[in-house]
Length: 133
Image (cartoon, rainbow, N blue to C red; front, side, top):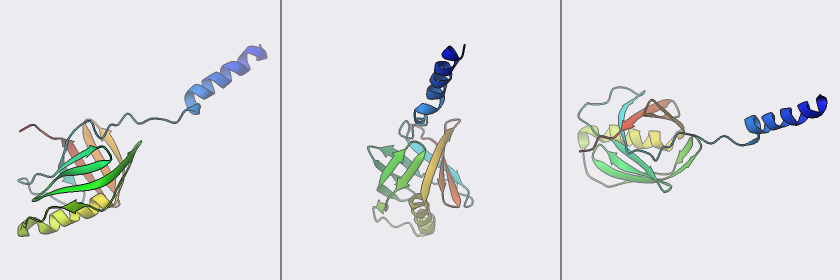
């Protein structure tokens, strides 16, 4: 009996633990729109978007288009220095600057009920799939 039990235990162990787990969360599956963040209230009339594709992050942050290198592996994300266009929007300049700083601190993400949740140090960003205009 032990003769059959040992190979069976080995097979089950390999199936359960032998292969690295692959994330089912596909951050590139949607274009995302920031809905809220844990740093405080966002004005309702602002649109902040994020698109992850081909090792890059791009989108619109309040006034400016932005872009950065983004390394996404399993459920981790590392975003390099963010570049942006230089349009002026004095009333939301701090908000946009804070958003870029939070992105640079991004470390992990998960997709839960079609919501993208990005952990950025002490701040969490919550995105939803962007609606088509």
